[in-house]
Length: 354
Image 1 (cartoon, rainbow, N blue to C red):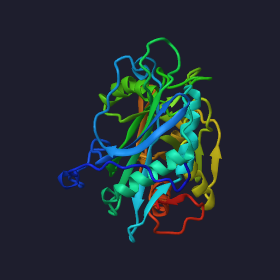
Image 2 (image 1 turned 135 degrees about the horizontal axis):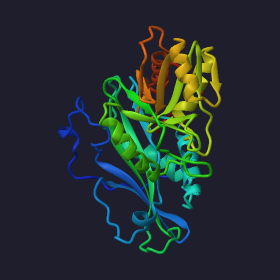
Image 3 (image 1 turned 90 degrees about the vertical axis):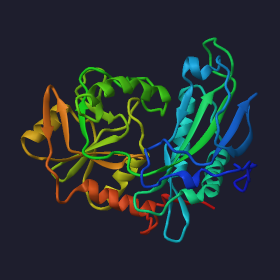
Image 4 (image 1 turned 90 degrees about the horizontal axis):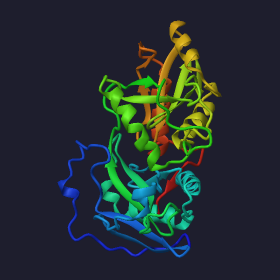
């Protein structure tokens, strides 16, 4: 296969498009008419194609159900005023996807399958990509183990698939978080840096406990001492102390967020001081007391950049006042402008869908 490969397409007879209320979308619950699928068996990827979105058949003994070999990525497609379609840093997603695959003993997906599968699916579903402010087409590449066997070993067969879902705002209203003191997301030598399905499943219970108390997310801390900030459940985390942005370095524990990298590069280009270093919980609480903690915000594909207006730790709730010169708002607006092709892209982040 080459970068000019055209994969076979089986079209859905009747589109769901006209039945969708694009003004009232629940994130990740509506899917477009088609999906991309490719199969791995006997050491190679075979039969890439686009087919109507529909249930798939797996045997009850498929290894994904028993040993959790499942990874994914989150991406978005955008439409500009001239109806051009754009992806944002898709090669970075491909690299991270294969890094996750390696960690879970899964085969790497070739670039021509990953990128061309995205290109062709987005082009086919272009009417689902709205030009409205805040609208995008969320893309979910993922891979699961499909071999029907329950012995504890890596699968010999896999499915790689891409789903597409029209999207708007991920979080609605104010976001408050718990800084974790008991539960842990990952540990040294673990799979925290991989976008593995099990990493998210393990967060659901402690996050649900906090949601019952009116908090929306958990900021995870190191598993050894719970003294150092790592990341939130769906976002990397930034703190603004004075006029400096702080964020934790990536590690075995922390996902190398593509939006995170973009925020760091964008802030640096704007002359905003950025420090990538370990951040202690005590440093953040001390900054609140000194009134130097001006902002907390999260970054991620789904949320883009989302302000955090308060956090709980040690039984205390700390609230932040809104900043008139918010870094979060400025960086979000500039990042979205690049994604939507309304300003030049000095970083070469945009990928034009052919």
